[in-house]
Length: 202
Image (cartoon, rainbow, N blue to C red; front, side, top):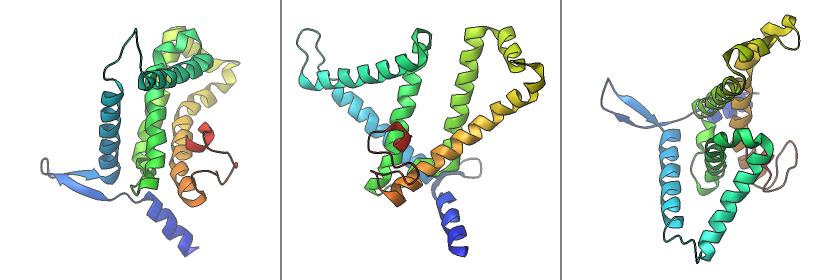
């Protein structure tokens, strides 16, 4: 039991790499530094892949990039429909970040998604986006009325769901790096999913 508790505490621990010497010292945690590394790597990759693009004579690199962008666009378009296309850039960005963040542990870095603050922030951003999308689609009055559907008696449950969803998303995302580290990158300890499945990585 003690070993289990120690293991959980180790999973939750996030070390401070350095402090910015203002306002009494602002701690910069390991998850933030690794996120900066991911951002820099993605920026450099986009800069490299975005060079020398051509409409008349696209190269193999450009064709591969366009195929990847088209895959993400088609995947989310089928899920969200035409009205949800405005949210595809955000969703694609998040899915790329989470995928790299979970797999970067295989290179010796500590995955940022092992920090509860990171997973909580991602979950809250996503829930806010969902509710904003609901307001844009239905209007404020219809969005408020939707909390009383299908019957007014479940109004408290629908309101509570707004706060439960971020917690659920946060915990599901938080456990992914643990499964990848303890069960390998090619098998999910709970479902046995194979590589490439969104359930495995996200």
